[in-house]
Length: 206
Image (tube, rainbow, N blue to C red; front, side):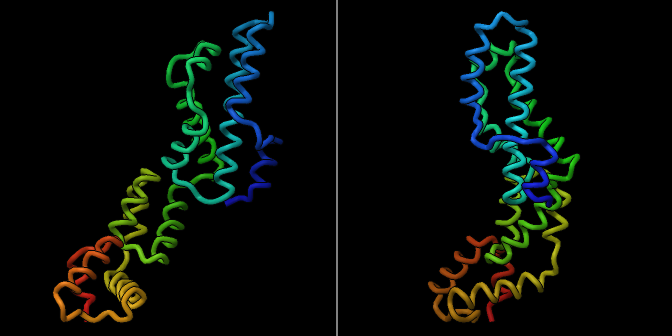
């Protein structure tokens, strides 16, 4: 992924302290101008689009994001208010449309990639000891690329089993099947909470 500095140079200078609230204060001032209201509206939309793009680039500069995750964060950062719609004369859905356009631009420039996000996320979740069921659930919340998700999780079962042994040994000191049924159930619940299928858990007990 390109560095934040590279991103920002390509986009032009921007002030990270800018916010939609600051933009809205500017909106109020322009209402008193004698300029063309349609031109003012276009300027306001362009300014909002630039703020959204700058925020998207800042988020992507910190780490990879799935497209769904990025969209969710941008919509939270830039809520669509009645005042904004009245000022611009646009219908409901203006901000969502601008966010979609910004994400499309990020994808065209390879600043955002679901495939790249999935690859890095799976690697990170596996290091934390998460199983395929939990990883898939998390990935589906962040992106819609089911092909990339399936490919990233399509590992040899033996690789998952070895990972499960490591998780058990780290948590309980060994991967042996407990003699106590209560302890068996306890460890089963723990491994299932980590996202491993029940049939795999029985296989991994020594």
